[in-house]
Length: 421
Image (cartoon, rainbow, N blue to C red; front, side, top):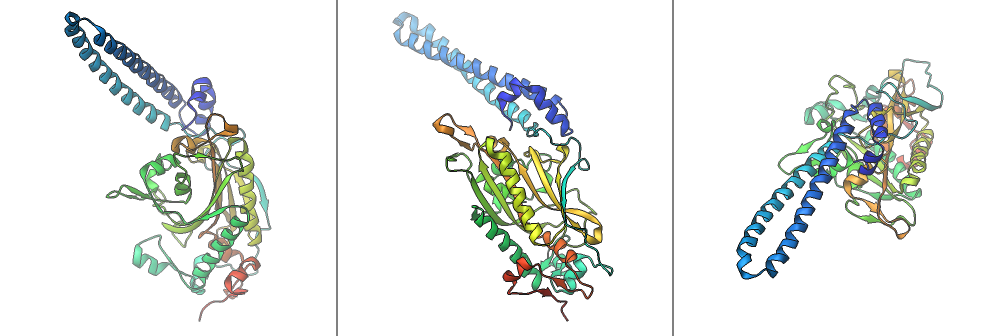
């Protein structure tokens, strides 16, 4: 949720943010009115409670002949207090619903618009050129004995796959490389649960307009996560953190699940858009003042990985209308995929400012003063989709694929992945 004080004191800022996201500014007026009604209901309840307490003392001190009338008044007052308490609960529920319609305040400089209105910040590397007709990642993966879509579909349905042989080894090598670099950068490695409670999924902002993309186990009322961001955000839920020694940084390695609702017909070939994949996710708790610098740091780590893997890419500043509800700014890094003649997203990193922390009640106490919400950030450092760009970028005419030097020690010194007989 956004800061209620900001909503009261600067509603025009909130409206501009909503409009940049393509949302109606009327949501801001509705939230302000709901907030006003909530506060009024609380005031009315507190006044009645004070009156009830004062009346109770009056009853205790009253002469015997006055007690019957005063007790009758006390019963009436008690009923009015109960009604006021119910009114507070209803007003708080309505206010929470109205605030849920307000997405995080976008940071100054984020481009307005939708999916196609991003701004390219920089590019790296030459577009790969081949003296032969390049094969796509699925054909290469099948020749290498690395990807088996046919049996994945047989076992689990469409958009599932097996990584086999060198494919399985390649993914583990990627993930280990990312984990090693995260640890070197001060991140604590984590293997988090991949099922979370509704309040954690809700708190991170994944049960809004994109809730159809999340798998829900109704009998247990648990959600399968689409990213380790979710359990890592919930890790410190309801806590007051000590950030005096610096940010808390975690690197979560987990399997992730996405229903890909609304993607019918898109990327049906290969492992670009699938229901299950592995990911190494960075997650940071820091002070709001340090959040933007931390965001740049996460991007630098991602770029370092992609550069060492020999991939050509661009960094984009995602437009406000294409941000998730929690993100105040998001940078995507898209690698060039030769057979698609296009850049495709490999990583994203988001600055969620205090939005998630307010919902999950995660605070810190700067300089020993009053507690304040922390800022949270997240960013991908490796995932299954990277195999797409690696295979296509480093392929050779005979169907073999060169192994980037940085991965060779993690693959037993292997320099070239060869087609299987």
